[in-house]
Length: 102
Image 1: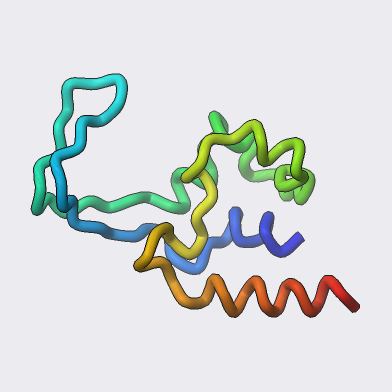
Image 2 (image 1 turned 60 degrees about the vertical axis):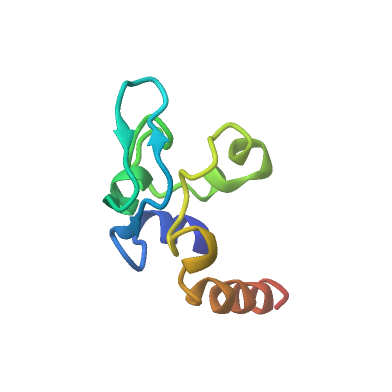
């Protein structure tokens, strides 16, 4: 329930990073050079029908173990990803764990 809410309404609509090594975008000739600033549109990814059919529909079943296995990594990141992700992620999962146990 909470996770689907975060998909529809992430705390941040985008996140930014700076490329530190050359990266070739899969399926293209585009190379992102070190030092280039990148914006990742979290809200856009969360509402992409390729990853979330009927993205405007509230459907907590999207996050069942079976359904999660069908989506590529990096398509759900309400708190960002990697070592610089929002510390709120840990607080959220702590709260979710306690509420779920009630």
